[in-house]
Length: 499
Image (cartoon, rainbow, N blue to C red):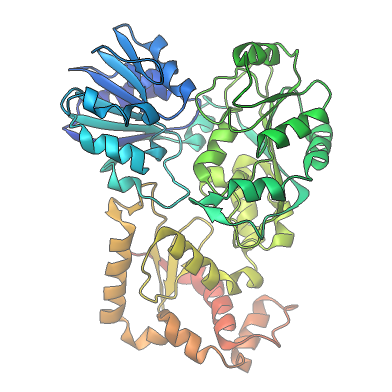
């Protein structure tokens, strides 16, 4: 195949690497499989994948002996072995720890799982290479435990801006579900409870299809039964599940427009190439950035008949859950956006950040920010040392110290800031606050803030707030809430990057 310039660049970087474990991020549709298939081989290569389609997919890109380690298939010392994680973890005694010069983890956001770690701890390759479109794990397990460095990054924004991926129009449709009582398991909504919460949504999803879908449509459902119920309500639609036979023929008929709509349950999330998808409907709520991006990714490939992807997020009540929607594709958190304002967060993908800033730039969301920061730190297992952080929509953390505001930029996909672990940066900032800003402790120490913040807001606080928000009812504010509002008002005037 004729490689693209960015694929050649990635390959050149890898070919010059010293021994170690490295991660490459390439958005869905940018061709990570053909990229890693063209890495220079100095010995045998092992490819680790977790689904059937992913195990067999790379074979067409190699021109050497190629073995498969999956189910009834066993490799026979081929130059390249593609294995399912579930199979090879039970067959490690058939291999020597030094059998492979390179190990490639396809969809490497799974690599922090225990099964992967057992395999990776057994082998001793020169290079361990992770390839993924979405390096984030919903369960908080850190890929930094597996990979030392991100060596190449071409994300969704880059792919769209450079004309390799389809642009996206984003829409939110409230279909009335309530996930506030659904528990979290392994970082995402518990499947059984999620299925129960979504059982009466099929009519609303079909209605969203009729009103907003354009052209060839792919719908993601929460279960087999959910997929079948949705398909019943859409003329010509076909439900595709793990048990569906002749998937390849169904995809061909879909691409030929003989089938207008495919409704699937976790079948087309990874490793499936569907040439034509004009609309994606997300009717499978998730907290996982990776899963969400994989679902949307099915519609990102360019096609002559498609101007841009029509993305429809089916939303509802989530309680405190951080539901992934279109802004998640750009790494933007909308938890600070008041519920009544979230309907405004739709339109062209790259217009969403400004809309979110405007929608979240309200006193109501500023007051909630302490709760948002605490939840984030708990999910990430970070010790904030009681710092009174304010979390901005772009993921950065700010803390007021009176005459200025210190900022920690948003962490990258390995949990690092400028190559350093986020926890290390937080620790260092805390030490500096204790050393240099004791006089401002009542502002940056959350326990101090909560202590004095219980009392009603002062008249001076309220009058200052009303200069910016003349219609705001300040009668019920306490000092801490007023301080949060005032801190945000003045942040833009005195922010400087924390070095």
